[in-house]
Length: 271
Ligand SMILES: Nc1ncnc2c1ncn2[C@@H]1O[C@H](COP(=O)(O)OP(=O)(O)OP(=O)(O)O)[C@@H](O)[C@H]1O
Image (cartoon, rainbow, N blue to C red; front, side, top):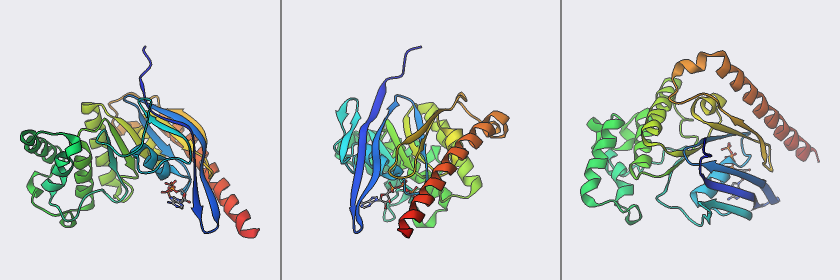
């Protein structure tokens, strides 16, 4: 079988932030790649630099050293080829549901003809079950509906890459589970390449084709785990011994990094 084409590459990437207590090494010499159609999830202790890595792929920040490239070209800023979904939903509270979905389509950079916009908005309103709420403002929606709106917004511009930072963290378990399946469905239909940051190992194993375990700060890749379950995936997968064995193994690996990070913090406090 032909190897999937590599798209995003982190090459010897390091990031240092100036802080009041001196420079803080957040990412240290990290190298990894995301190939076409891959769904890569990053898990690791809180504060280990996951969001920083995603911000680099999104083009919001540049590494202190090393390169982050897209198809071999250095990423120097955001672009319509990368749709970003943040923890805090990524919807504009001052726009209605349909205006939120249309927003990215109206930006010049996404180059969507005016005639096509309405059809795209309709399609995503329907897909996300938001048609009856098209004139509503986000604050009047439930958390799950806001999340569906954020997904619709990110997808409407047809990005090749979806970059997600804890997109489901604030949801209750049932809504989260429904969002997982909706995401898998859309990815199956539209074949996108995904980078997901999550604290949930279960979510990572259920959704991703590859899980990267990130170490305590300064972060490195501790482990790369290929997830062997074929798509489309169904919830019943989560009840299988294979799923649980993999989840437990990765969870153990993440917990060791949490412990390392705590030990680091303790020794710093002592001395
Ligand atoms: N602009 C900045 N200036 C200084 N420090 C920063 C800046 N951005 C991030 N940091 C620090 O870098 C570290 C990594 O932050 P980051 O948000 O990437 O971690 P994370 O792994 O996504 O965390 P969490 O899992 O808690 O969301 C943190 O200690 C944070 O305080």
